[in-house]
Length: 124
Length: 106
Image 1 (cartoon, rainbow over the protein chains, first blue to last red):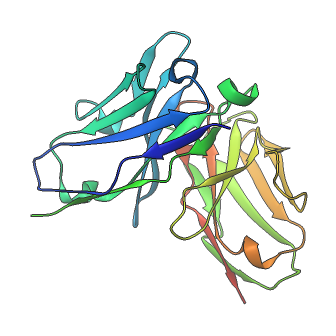
Image 2: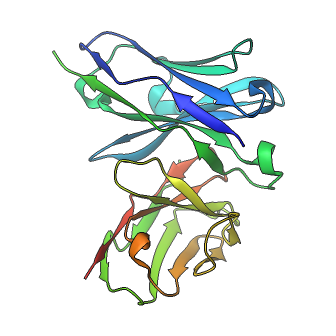
């Protein structure tokens, strides 16, 4: 059974960076497509980006390009999402999620499972 | 970017009711449409992928239909644990979500 366990809550000042981790168990990270989604109360769910294990390419949503970096440590099966130049409106719960195609053999992309979420609060 | 519009944004219903939530895409997405349920304080949980395929373990009272731009999620007989927020997501071109439908007890 694939499980994703995220790092704990963070409080950051405006202008700082935050790095959230997502530890994979029950599967090998190199065989997975990990995506990052955030949820803010007034905005809803926003896809931030994700990787394609077939070509190793990471695609970022246009809104976050230049501020977000997604990396992987295959030695520990841990994915990371770093968001820089934080603003107050980056306050949100950040989730990692796996594309179920690579686990269940579906034909189309769908996120399952998800991590438990990491609350990032940006405040001065 | 593909915009996803859900309706209604909130819905009051009773246990045993049949409810339908709709999701419309701003352009055709074939059947690359997923539905999620989210309970307070929890991560979204996949219910349906590919517009109509029930995820393993999801009760059969949930069903999905549609293709192109218009999709529906139907719960045939509401149970107490179904009162939650539901989101649609397109996975045709990158990914985007609907704004959510909050299902509340009447």
